[in-house]
Amino acid sequence: MNLYLSVLRTVVPLFVGWLLTVTGALGIDVDSEAAAGGVTVVVAAVYHALFRVLEDAAVRLKWEPLRLVAGALLGWARPPEYPAKPDASLAALARRTGR
Image (cartoon, rainbow, N blue to C red; front, side, top):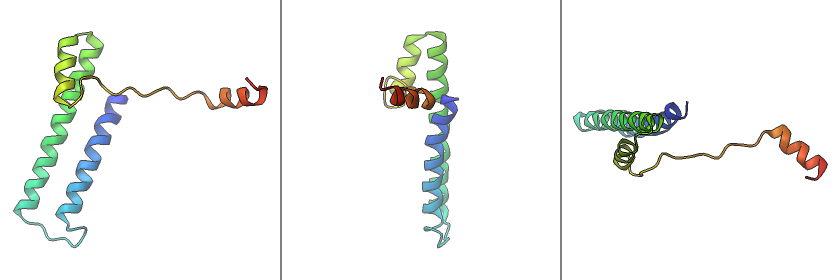
């Protein structure tokens, strides 16, 4: 799920940025240069998705060289790690009991 969310969080801003550019912030005047921007967005999205999938596969397979190469080609040698959120009910219980 994290892989899917990572790709989605990269692709959506690329697409929205391209869409706003192409439509002239919705004044809508599309030309071949704007269409070329769409190709750029698609290539960037496919590139990101491909190397995130490779990076994720390398982590699962414990194949460090592939993980390093895929990560480096994404701009950072390690995939992002997000701290787990504590269970809200446990945090509320800790506040009530003063622990």
